[in-house]
Image (cartoon, rainbow, N blue to C red; front, side, top):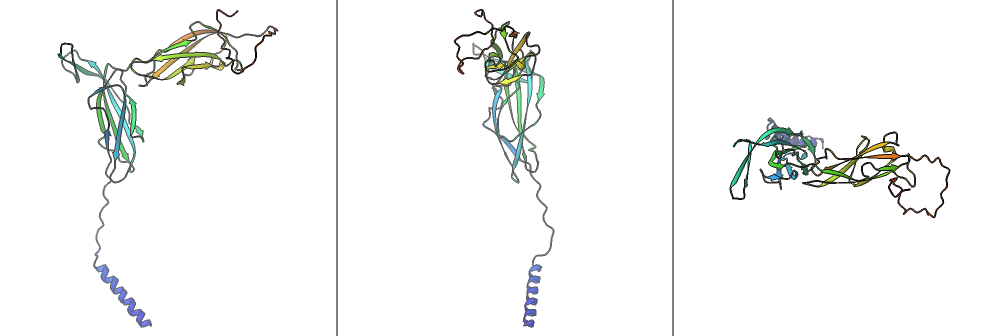
Length: 298
């Protein structure tokens, strides 16, 4: 039996030895270098067109030896001035009432370059900075893969935007120089002084408002009214106070001036020990006392 096992083992060694001889040793191939990703823009405005400053942009990335981890985007704005000469960096054409083509030349006045911003999205609506009468925009987006490789040739789009106009804000209540009775704390019947406002944007839409009192912090909101509680006012409470409201439009321009009113606040002392009896019934549906002093009050 041992003899048979020895013969069998010898045959196995002979077999594997002959098989190994068929595959001689050699150098292994080097790993292929990791290729960078590429990026493409899709469903975008026509290159060179003049459009509104709020632009929706879409893109996608491809990586043949990995996957896209995230994207980076930026844009460069060139603020243009109309050239007095028949030459410049860019030109635009228009047709007058007689059918004649008029060419206007534009020169670069200054440039603003936005730093690269990270995003995981493949679609963004961007409000391009458009403070000049005409602005040249260069948008760029690039992919970054799972190995950290960056697309060396970002996808880009060049277009123009017209000047965006600032929103205009108006306080509708209270009126300037209005007078109010106020308490130093909020209770079941007194919540504060009401504030109402509105705004309009000549070339877009209002998306947000902010109010503050006496130069304090801004309170941003989408509502067109607010109640200013007693703790928001600067001390002392019984004096003149200033309310300011601003607004922001859909291109993120903020009203640089806003609207302001000055009001006078009086704080009752409740020194008189007088009880007034009437037929008033407490009801949650009754309006809160706003403290406004009117000509009808006695």
